[in-house]
Amino acid sequence: MNTPTAKVSIDKLKTYKPNFGKSKINNLIRLSANEGALGTSSNAIKALNSFTYNLNRYPPQVSDELISAIASRYSLNKNKIILGNGSDELISIITQTFLESKDEAIYTEFGFLQFPQAISVSGAKGVVAKDVKFTANVDNILSKINDKTKLIFLANANNPTGTFIPKEEVIRLHKSMPSNILLVYDAAYSEFINNKDYIDGSTLVDKHDNIIMLRTFSKLHGLASLRLGWGYCSEYILSNLMKVRGPFSVNTAAMLAGIAAIEDIEFQNKSVAHNLKWMSWLENEIKLLKLDFQRSVTNFLLIKFPNETRYNAQNAEKFLAEKGILVRGMNAYGLSNYLRVSIGNEEENIIFINELKNFINN
Image (cartoon, rainbow, N blue to C red; front, top):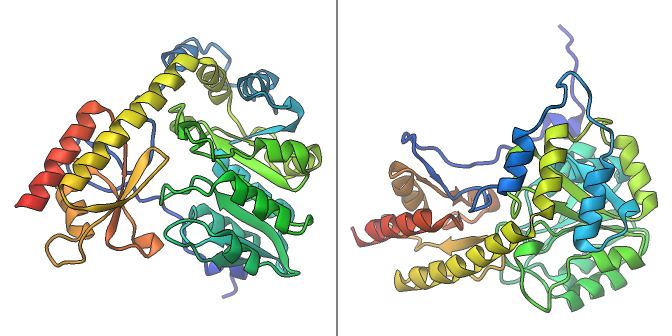
């Protein structure tokens, strides 16, 4: 019996399933998803509580008010801002818009897993550029470019490593790549970075037509459940992405909460300060446990465990889950002896370290 068949690139592809961990304990501490440690801006919650729109009405295709709020917050050209149902959707429509089956797209060794997934869905070929010391390497990326290359994906800072490449290297990458290649610059964690050597990509967008910067409301702003992201790119790129993006991609609730969240500077500053304080504390505690970790500029830490039968990462993840603490295993990245741990609130961080001590010392 003949049945409909998916195209080959889809049929052979494994479903992307974010692994947030599992536990039988109901009152969980979830440090596995890089979510905002302090929750959501109270202003955003108020905006949602006052949501009186008729739910039977479609949302506007584009929220001029949200776009204007983003442009004002980051001093950007509002005509270059595109909204999406999370940055995941924008990654997907970028590949759908620019990649054909004969094309190639480059992504880094430990880059965001959504990059190769979206490339495969488009039917194009993904090409891996090796990292150096868990950090994207410009020379390795450039060495993978050929006449089939159409896109380059770079998460800066990177998930799950927490590393970043300095602005000089970003500029060198962009300057050295052919102008017919699009650089997809994912700056999801940029608000957490306080380093003069970092560049969020927006200035490059204002000067060049072959780069798109991606941002999210899921991290600093704590709106992960509403799925809201945005991109900054040339008007030509934007107009073509809008041909692929669904007409009602972003829902009305997300728009209202997004406006309130991005205008709440006090909450943003509080969240950044919290992250800096507890990242430093967590690093010190991990050192006292004699565990290695990758220095991070984000809101998470990649911790290395000894490759031993008793004290390995898998046993640590299982032990913590039994205590109601979820962390992220790194098997999907080939890093079986690592765990990624998000910065939580004060109580969550202390409980995590105490239970990690119990695991190490038992």
